Length: 199
Ligand SMILES: Cc1cc2nc3c(=O)[nH]c(=O)nc-3n(C[C@H](O)[C@H](O)[C@H](O)COP(=O)(O)O)c2cc1C
Image 1 (spheres, rainbow, N blue to C red):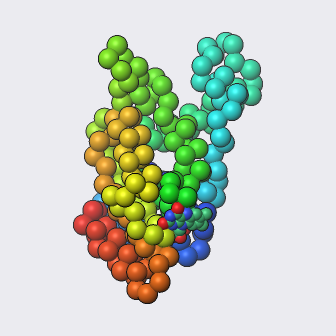
Image 2: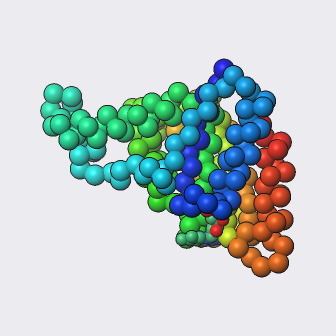
Image 3: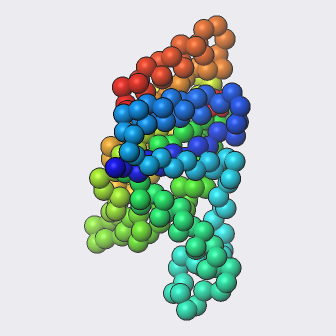
């Protein structure tokens, strides 16, 4: 049995194309791996807090020097890292907003890129600690950005995944979904066809 953690980040609960891809992923995955445990964390509907002084204090101070707020922030943040540590497969569903990922997803990443937990510093540089995991990224984009300098999603997410030790990362983009003509249909069908090969 594997644990699958899905992070939803579209601000839209209705008509979201990244959520449509997630639904396909869940159906496929459940059919192929019925014993797997799937956990969905929706950081748009239930946003995680941004980094603040309490959280940094909670992270950095020894337990006996933390105040109650710092401890509460740390406990909340630990829920997020524990969830990721327990996952064998991480699925991130992300709209492109202003050429990048939603700020809600960035806020989640700010919690889970944690020194001493998901990466550590060594004499030769940082080392990712999440070995043996796989990530799948499902994006929806109004325009077409693959391979272009305007794509600040895939290169960024590849970097942060590698930083915490996840090197097996598959990207599936539904692109051109806001262009006129049949671009939306083609973009979604292309992504669905690629996704069908994943699970
Ligand atoms: C605030 C906002 C910013 C957006 N920025 C971009 C962008 O920079 N590039 C792009 O191609 N599409 C952009 N889009 C279009 C979305 O990526 C597209 O509508 C996508 O389908 C949204 O994902 P969702 O369908 O899962 O909600 C933007 C949409 C919104 C609402």
